[in-house]
Image (cartoon, rainbow, N blue to C red; front, side, top):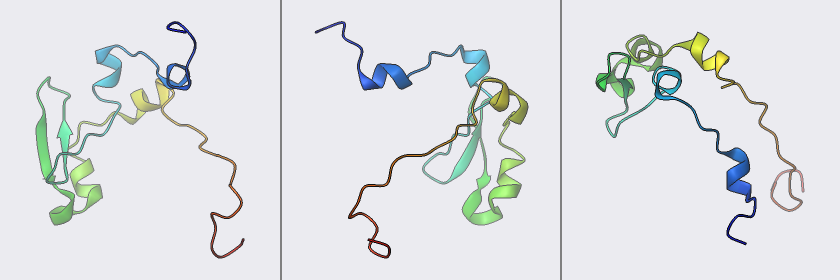
Length: 88
């Protein structure tokens, strides 16, 4: 049983640090993006103060790397009956 394939092992994808560093958005507890592009975690201004677009410009996010690593997913799941109070 120890080596059985589990649900979590099917969704974990190992990635090297250089791929991950700029292709994820990190937020701290003050709602600031953390720019890791230089090797340190440099906070942007808070999205609560300047808005998402302005803060995102100082996030170090690399959209091209995000797409190259397969970051765009088609999220879907079957709707369970009884979970939609409007349409059930």
